[in-house]
Image (cartoon, rainbow, N blue to C red; front, side, top):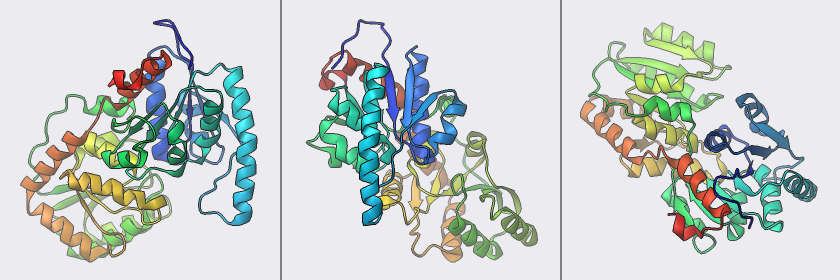
Length: 375
């Protein structure tokens, strides 16, 4: 483990990515690191969203020729292992050449080579796990980690006995944290209720179809809607709202979600790690329909964490349709006080200082301070 003098910059690597949630949390950590004056390098894959999001955000990205392993056939798995070996050799050279002192893994198969290189070079390896059910890369590397940070307490048992672990919450980008810093509690909603529907950056056909099935049962005087559909469904959904006489703004992608979160009384969405963290900091009640094909069904576990905290209702994707959606909406619109209580519970689950805490703890680890002394 390298040592540094107090105030001396630390050279960081952030490894991993793949999904928008993983990359956005990695960017949140990078913002916090650079705010302290330290340099940071991203290590990922050209296959993941990091290849599209990191450089435009102003950070340096080095990509390695790594391939996904989980869920592949025998030949694809063999190719993935060979790619991992070659990428690890490249990562070893990169860590030595750039004198990187600590590696933060945000998970995903793209994190594995840099994490392995950190282990081989005896650099501190820190895992940041965004989901309630940890991914394979972070689980596999845990026994070699100096510290594990989880977004959900439900993820802690998976790391117990392998490394020091704590629930820090999910790192969120500064723009989102600033948007809700000191925000007043929401007022009790009243008709027309504001419903925000977001299926992720690509939309979600299941949510779109259920909403269209529900339209004949909705009172146009009681609801206004903002619906992010994805590009493929935008015209179909917009036309259905027009024919139903429902006031709705339909977009394929919405870059201004903080403003939408403030506008909404209720959200209908998937349950990715980033989504549930954003709902919490916004204090926005939600109906969560987990993506049924997520690895290890981790979105269901994410949704349960919010539901158990009283901030959301989990709707089973196996039977989710317009009838179930109408029932859930009616139950909440008839109880504005319940929406207000869900909002309060959501705020209680928020961890706006997660990125700052993780970075501060990691700096202490590089200095040689034992993990238990940084709590």
